[in-house]
Structure formats: C-alpha cells, structure tokens
Length: 172
Image 1: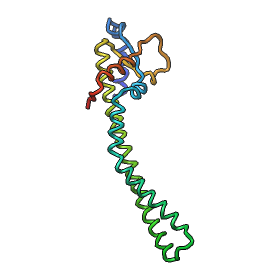
Image 2: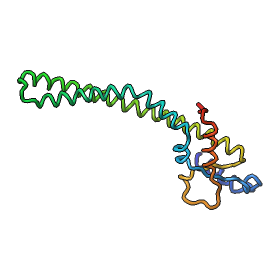
Image 3: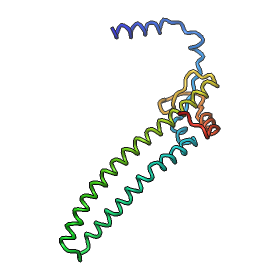
Image 4: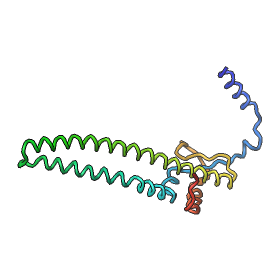
C-alpha cells in the first residue's frame, strides 16, 4: 500500500505541468551558525544562564577547595593514625558528594543550555520568516546543508540586522 502511494505521488508530480509558481521560485540561503553567534539576544540569554547557574558553581568550587585542603592535610606527617583515618573517611565522603553535585550541575547546565539554544533557534526562525515574507521568498535553505549552489542571494546579514533592530525582543 505504501509503495502504491509513493508511486502514485511520483507519477502525479511528473505529470503535473509546471506553472508559474514552479518556474519562478525565489530561493535564498542563510548561515544559521553565523546568525546564532552574531545576534545580541544570544549574549543576553548566555548572561541570564550564567547568573542562574553561578550559585551552584560557587558551591561546587567551595566543596572542591575543602576536598583539596583535606588531601593536603592528610599528607602532613605530624598527624596521628587516628586523625589520618578520620580525614580519609571525610575525603571519601566528600568525594562522593562532590561527584554527585558535579553530575547534577552538569546535567542541569546541559538542560538549561539546550533550552536556551532552542529559544534562540526559535527566535532566528521567526526572524527568517519575517525576512522571507518581506522578500516574497519561496525557499530559505541553510548554507551548511548545501553542497553547491550558484548565484543565490544570501539573507544572513538581513536576519542579523533585524535581530539587532529588535535587540530588546525575544520571541518565546
């Protein structure tokens, strides 16, 4: 059944005469990576993300310093065996906690970065739609997906300019 539908669709496409909509399509390209790195909204989101995760980072840094201090303290030859055993137990305990905190922080950081990246990509998509509608373009392709294309307009700078104009706006 699927094969029949595919063949039928292919035959319909080949038989359908090409009208004006097909022969005069306006194709443009963009460089999403360049846009992503150039828009000011990315900096704002990055700073918000950094602020949000900064306190967790400080807690981990404090724990790391304490952990390293105890390791240095353990190297002190003047300590008794009982004190050394106590410090070893503390080091093992703190190492477990520190590893869990780092794992949690890394997971949280990755989730927040992915969410921020998706928000920026959605914003870029909206900007591309605005530019495409203004220019009556039928097809917008990302330059990274194209092996070769000749004499096609690049609207990357137009999208970046629109993002700069809308510096205080971020579509959510």
